[in-house]
Image (cartoon, rainbow, N blue to C red; front, top):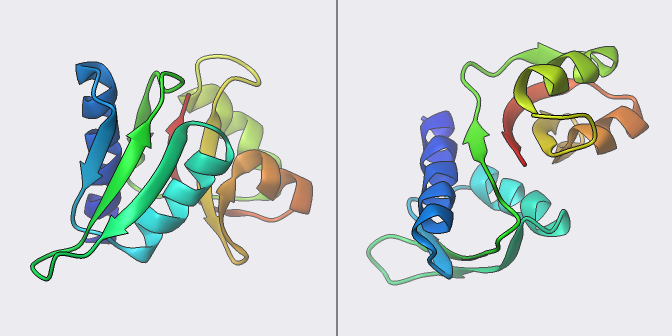
Length: 129
């Protein structure tokens, strides 16, 4: 279920970028989507985002930037150790040092570069470039 919410969120961002929209609306919301959005924001792939609570169903309003070419969730979530990040980056990213893998670790959601620096493994959630 959570993976589908993340997939829908990534698709909403992709659709907004392709349509030239300034904002993407992501519904339904989850803590996983929020944590992934925080990582995308820290890496400069999206601008500000906010949670809009309307009483019926919450949604995120996300400012999209021109920096995103593609963002996707990955199913199934592959487990990986610290030394496997390069293998998965070659599989999902178009070039070396171009883009980010988004992973969930025991220390939270982060990019593969952060996880590699901290020398921790995790599960692959998605990618952006």
